[in-house]
Length: 260
Length: 80
Image (cartoon, rainbow over all chains, first blue to last red; front, side):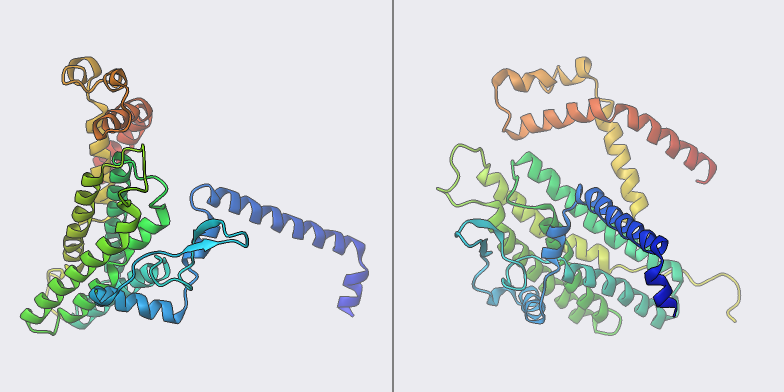
């Protein structure tokens, strides 16, 4: 009865049309404004993952020495033109943003869990931990961007890729964070150094193709080959520092006053 | 440590440090003035890029930095 009346009512239909077009305009507006900073297509491309990809990537982060091929495959259209890189679903050496985002959330929750087990959990610690985790990523991204500007790295290293590579550090960090409270000290130290090395190796291998071109491929452009190698090494070594910062969670002083 | 607030303060102080470098008294004397890079025609080297960055920060960030500094000072005075 209501639907019948609704369909026959021209004013209502007109209203629906207006609402529809308003929604459409709003969506376009959002897309334009957000797209100015990050293109949504690129973001979707980075979240296009599969279970196999995630497992492969985690294995690559834990045992990067076993991986043979680190080349990213080019995506081609029907005429064989290169139009970019293959999405993570089809290419396990492509960076994604799914693992970094999930890793960061898991890291914050893991810290909360551990402080909770120790009985010193405060809700605002979650915010502080998330802030410092984001701060570490932001710092590294700014550092890499700065180096990229100085060393003439342009299109080879896109912004989402930098964020992705920077965010992979949460995976080893979570392992060390979870080991730290109960494992003997030598085990956590071994894990820290092992995963630090693995992450450094991973960063070098996966960013090498973007940063350091083959001898013959680039002509005329000043590529600072030697400086880029140094820069890559610096990035890899700072991973130890970042993990070190991230695994130090706060254990606040016991509250003043008698315990309840 | 490494929270957003700290990072923001560090970035603000570094930007201030770059913005107060004096063109005639300091930068020209060590050969880092804006026109010294263009003299040799290289825009690709690291030094030329740094000079370009410094002069860009000095021209672009001067007015916004005043506003941001005032806000931060008032905030630190009232709540810090």
